[in-house]
Length: 459
Ligand code: SF4
Ligand code: SF4
Image 1 (tube, rainbow, N blue to C red):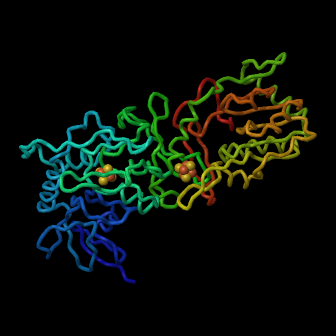
Image 2 (image 1 turned 180 degrees about the vertical axis):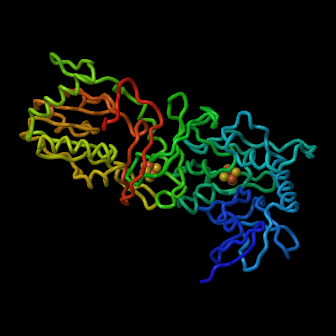
Image 3 (image 1 turned 120 degrees about the vertical axis):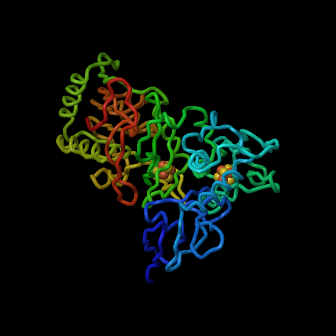
């Protein structure tokens, strides 16, 4: 089918037939202000802020619902288009509270941004504002502020169209219109926190992140969620060397604009429990802190003594680079068997794969299959990034080994059975790559510094 040619702000553009004007504008690298339109949702056309002027049409048009046609001449920045958007802004702000100084959305709020760009510098609305409910619990994860809502329905459409959970709706009439959880319950979808991201204003906020930090103070780093083998792309927000939130980063080939709620909370494991911050060696039955040099010397000595009677457990939560190096160590001593601890997680048709290891595909490609090899008849074990706490029999078998080398991040029952402990770091504290369930190699980036003397396993 031949392409449609049109002119936008003086530039000739060619787009696929069936495109809308807002898509054509974005295809040329520009944008039109929008609240209710989202590239991953159906067109609603209710917010009216995406107005543009089209030659030959008597009034301004919403670009999100206007199809392109050959020869069309569009002006997104004309005085008429800008004046129309200014009027829409005035209408949207009539009842909007002046919450910006305490609103979590400040700094990434479309209402603020467009208001700054072409809003009025005053209000002609002389009547008291309509007040609505504030900090309403939609679930333990999502908090709603009805006054801030501009009724764009993105949240309703996300749950309905993407998550397949018809859990939000609009209730009441006129200026009493409000978003409400259907049937008076709470949100239950395992993808419900995406409504926080799609909300263009501060009406839906993350209960976990609320009031923790202004967003402009966050160090934002693009990385990959370690929650399952999908490898959703994320932007990790950190401050004071603390992880504060994970939000999805757009990747059309992996997760589009979304991620699951479980994935958002993977950052909590980093600061949970007792982190290992120093190498340890067993002396007289007890683990004692030591230097890296001493610990490595003891590790090399122990591995050499085990030789072919060594079993390797190399985690599929490690990066490709680390798995490769750990497998090389096993090759070096001729270790008899290797594998990784299998982890399950929820599975569905949207993103969650059921495999709780982020790098199972990478491990398999480098000859580290799923499953812990038998420790029967072994002299020693090299546990790199995985522990055996979930397997009572394997854990007990460790007690009978001559040598156990443990490289990991937290104090665990496995770690307490080791002869040498090397403190490692989480995927939020190192650089490397994961291979996702579809074989896509994706970059993992360090966001915060690891505790004490802990080092990435590849080091
Ligand atoms: S809560 Fe946010 S996403 Fe939902 S309708 Fe209101 S403004 Fe739109
Ligand atoms: S689907 Fe998997 S990779 Fe994506 S956010 Fe959830 S746990 Fe993380």
